[in-house]
Image (tube, rainbow, N blue to C red; front, side, top):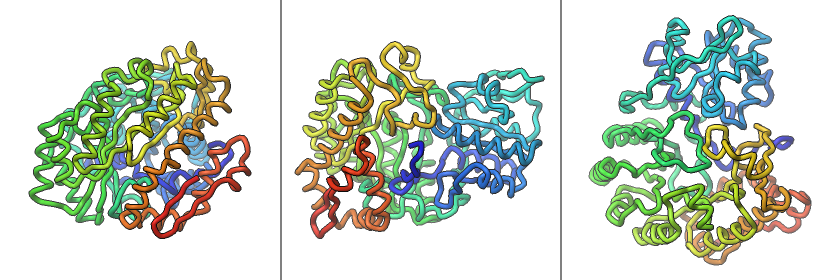
Length: 482
């Protein structure tokens, strides 16, 4: 949040898998690569220190992968690089760049190239010195004019990719953290085993992978997991595929491998409501799965039909029951502030959250991204404050027509998030799992000032009120937030 110290990584610091995949691909092609994680444990503050750190590697090419919220900070670093070393070429990639494309070169002069879509082969071609006009997926300047080359075909065989270059991260894995209470064993890491999604949710930006769906084979995923276990001692993996279980045969084969030759790793993954039968859930449990996430988004059927077509609330309820019946934990993913949202629809979502008996939940603040279908009509459905730095699902930059103000929306968010964490049933689950979550409790205690600071943001009208009203006690057998 602008004007505040970024403490999100205290609770959840994930390796930048996109950069690490590109780094590994470049190294396999014979290039020397360094990775600077600007959100990592040794991250520097400010554009100039970061620029000097990068230039200290004497790079022949500097690449930035950015989200919408991170783009301007990255550009600040790029500008300092150009000021200190004008001849060092700079390329930007990532979902924000892939959504906006060529116009970015007109407005941001410190950027020499843009990478549209997947970056492994485009960066390798550029690093190899191929003529710019021959590099698919590249946007470049020709006498000041932005030239957009034909798009690059997606990598068809994901098994042809090397494992991400995790070893290039300072402090990996112990200084990288999965979300609190999402794991039992430590240390943890993240993995992506597929790219793309065939569905078309209104809020999801598909600028990089489009609507294709490609995946690693079960044998590749198993070998990747074994590599992380043996090389880095990983005990838990969060698998961040959009649709991990879409190819049923692949998941059955992977679960059979994990059950026959256990690695001592637990994992979390996501399923789609209505697409997780009992046999599949039991296989996941036997393979070491701990928690399954469901993208639910809203408890209002009308909003669901618009923003997440094909998902129905009865299927959601049924899927959650069957996940838990299989001995797995169920996590619900929700979104507040969608176009068409009203106070009544927010109440429906809050009621649904409590009725499901979830083990965990996440409520994000709806953010319209440039490459999402909803962007085309967003200005017709409410008020948008297009501040890229705040477009991170942590701020309400969009105000639906039926909601009086952003202050009201923030208050509704605070009320209903607190409602979940104050629910006696949820607290009983946490108390029963106190010992299981000892690693999370230790992190909570160790970084208590940062967590208290984070929780104060739930009282934006009066930042001092929360200090008096917030009670956080960690005692044997009791855990209380708010």
